[in-house]
Image (cartoon, rainbow, N blue to C red):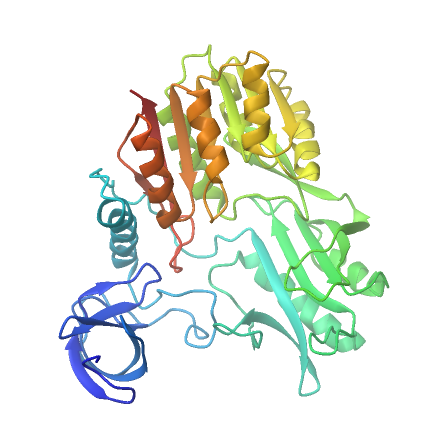
Length: 451
């Protein structure tokens, strides 16, 4: 029997946060998760759902607010699912994120390693250089914005405080053009209609901006809109149409057509130039990416004669940023277009000590070693699900002196570190980097050294 029932009204003090940024209160040791409350606050709450091991609730009344509580700066915060921790001032956001990494590494993973202070952002707003904006038709008007939490209903917005300013201006302009031209909009339920998403990307100084129209089918109705847009926003140097006619939640389809300008924009990262296409993976926060990559390269402590294998390498960013400090860079990536982009980016920067291989990191790495390549350092930057078990096994088999692990998910990071630690790798202190202020996401970087 649980000590609470659904629809109970109770009073408690918030003791901690979940990794998603929800507050944790306990009733006779039974945890209840409540959004938008801060550690140390006394609240009156309603129990919404009861499971065997934990429950969910909703704050009804704030009895004693925390000193570091603020009014969310975004007017859409309580409707939109894009941000999760805006009631926390920025200092408290850092404390929450450091705590999330620390709990994962030391409480879950029992690795007994120091968690450094979070590498914070000077201005934690208007940082996103990529905006994926769904489009819907409602009550006679076209709306653009972001999804409500756990739904596909759009909150129609005029300004998002974590997107770059140029993105907000373009979003409003495109929305008005769509309404004026009565553009056909995709209906998810009926799988009919044309425009599904608008994706906007920009480089660090907004001198180059790309707009991608994602459509259900290849009909092009954008000529007038593009003319008006480029007149109003001359920094738009690339306009593309991506065709996604599948019944899917995935944003992009396979085929992309260039409608105006180039099919890419160019950005500079730690002195290297990168061409970024509509479907390229590229970190969304320029200032913090430079800090993250700088820290990763610093942890590698390169002397100039190392062979580096850059796994999950994408368009080659981290490896190319390190290329001046190493003898050879070998990138591995499973997405063919990313491999082509990485080769092009190496050429663009006059880097002649980098080569790229298409395939799964675990398979390609073993093949390289069988051909006599012995990496001194392996960079690992996997997706949220962390490293594939087979990849970790091959990493141990290859036995590099150092592994630099960049992670976007503390729980898969601790799992992978635990495995590598048991296989004879010592772990440095973990450095969290705040790539996504106002949200519950946190990036980390850590160095492992063979003992």
